[in-house]
Image (tube, rainbow, N blue to C red):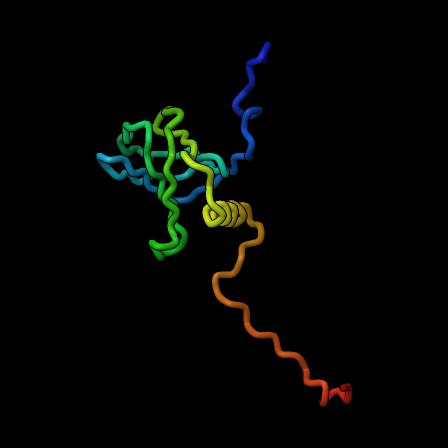
Length: 135
């Protein structure tokens, strides 16, 4: 790059991580089933999988987490670029704590990293001090 031109990778504050998760793109006219190709705390690259382009500059991207629809993230986004059945979007607002946590959990799950348990941990049972002879 010359002068004050910078590449998109240089301008990014957060790394893009390859994921393969379902998503939906909502516009005032329609809802389009899609797949996330990569994800960051700043935006996403979405594959429309042959579905028609939603057409608007603004949309809401819904990312499901598990079977419960209440757990899904619905993120307002702005379409930055369209290319060969994909949309590059940037989140319209800074993510709140819950959204950041869920996105990081999804990324960790895709990379095989640590994922928090969904169920409570079993209670630990300690040997009683009277059995061991200690007080």
